[in-house]
Image 1 (cartoon, one colour):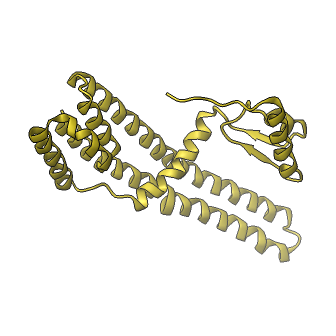
Image 2 (tube, helix red, strand yellow):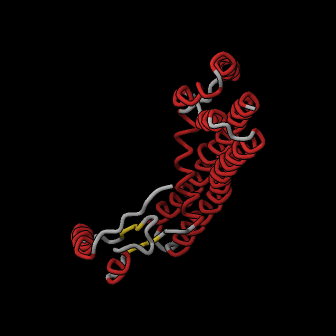
Image 3 (cartoon, helix red, strand yellow):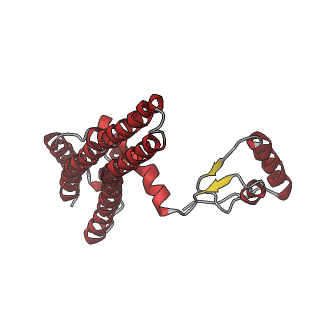
Amino acid sequence: SGAFLQPIPADVSGLRDLVLNNAHGAKKVADLFCGLGNFTYDLHADDYALTVSGSKRIIELINAGKFVKLAMFNSSPPPDKVIAEVINFAQKARKEGVIALEKDSQNASDDILKLGLELVSDGVDPAVVKDMLETKLDQIDGEVKRAAKVWESAGGYSPTIGIIGAVLGLIQVMQNLSDPSKLGAGIAVAFVATVYGVGFANLLAIPMSSKIKFKLEKDILVKTIMIEGIL
């Protein structure tokens, strides 16, 4: 549980003035997660605020970018290492009792393992522990699959965008048939747009989607081992 602190009216006014003064002159302001905050309506008065609070698609797009770093640079621990870690916790619980796991849970290698150890040390019913851990695992699974879907969709749409660019380039060519000196620019736009669209899809978006899915499979395996070990 937590608390929400609301500033007094004088402080709200001061914060609003600070935001408006710093945002002055900007063409667009993105109001993330605060679509109905203290500053939104004043920013909208000048018609340059973009609020995305509560937009499921925008949040999924932000998460898709976050998972790029996780997929590229964060690797799951190998299953044998996880098994050894779980066995170590089990041996300690057998010797010193499950209460001893509460302190050691802070050093767990994974959030699910940490949560499970905390629940076990608190004496929570095993059925409840299983339900909570599996629910969290389902949440992780869904979040990662949505991020992979965003990249997969981007890979599907980008060639189409490239074709649109090619068509626009050809339109420019058709408009300048009487002036051969301008034909090269239009043809270049047509080819470059197509290359960018196809290249983005096949060199970045689709491989990134596959990379995220592959990492998800490894993570689910490791986390499932943790859950089974805890129970």
